Length: 476
Image 1 (cartoon, one colour):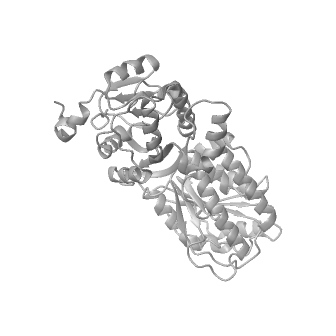
Image 2 (image 1 turned 90 degrees about the vertical axis):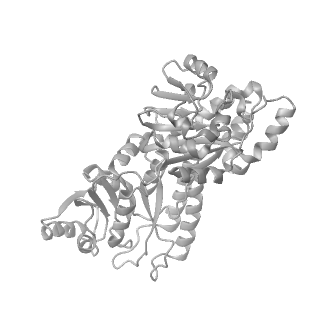
Image 3 (image 1 turned 180 degrees about the vertical axis):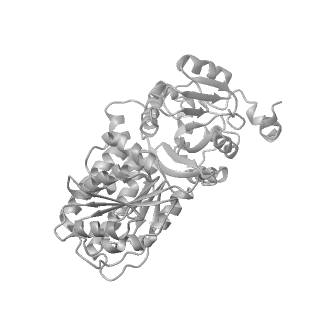
């Protein structure tokens, strides 16, 4: 008897069954089982980078791993017969016989998959905790399971002989799985419901699964959840920080930036990017360099137009481990930047997003129509991203430089579409499955200059970007 099983004697009656994973466990037509796996593979390819090291717990015959482009794949399954099929189906993979509650290898993986297996597991919390032993701090756990709404559909299909009989299943709800993840030490990032028709019936399946499923999540068959290891993981030494200040016609605010910004990490650098100002902003920036000779300060006059271009050019100059954007109007108080730093350094967040809509605002800091628009876009973009984002338009956003470099490398997926720079980062972070956390701040009145946002022109532009994001992230 293995040492692991000695500690889990209560599971032995369940683990001694012939198989804990069934290829036909999904409520699909018998002739549609392969099509269903193909649909699952499509959504997993959207989540998993092609160069990631992948582990699937409960891999069955390897039909899902066969759908992925990844070459470094490992699979566990309790059924030796299924593993024998997996070896033939995925010749480049490595496969081991064993229950997910007990299996472990002395290495870590970039992505761990548990597909259509949680409801069949003897002990889900133990399986998830065991998976955590094979995770590094940047690992992503991706699970999919069937919605409880489909339980009666499955029963009817079984009685009619349309699907094979399934073993006793737990039929966990989405909240059940999220709670079990938390108990096992995982931190959930996002959740999406997919698949209305688990079979290939062109063009009906395309219409239902691509266009209607995102609008009818309560009726979808499959729930996808993505999680990361919780913040109990070991933290590195204090990372360095680059604070980027895009500035256009902000001459009256520049002098306050450095004295009001706290020192963070092992060192903090400032990157001023001036955008064709007409009020002496560039001169004020040069004066600041002379005034603080002992500070790390970089200056740059952008070659393009718009804040999005300024952010990209500025971040190319950044050397810090953590990248921050601070709008030069200082309506987001620089003193608050330490909150963003703490969120990333502690592991609470991978991407920290400022929120102006929690605390009361000063005076006329935000006009009523702007407030209404911000609340609408917050709800809409939270739906698109699959994780809550209360304020998409707050200019302060913070992430690690390594993650930003990955966003740049994957930018072709979205293209050069964002003149503001906010959505390029938000959409890129979501595509990388980064944990986005809102940081409430007290939004202040401007003390100099006027807003450069046009309510109606930019509002229509934002609606267009909302549709673009939905097409790229939701209707896929």
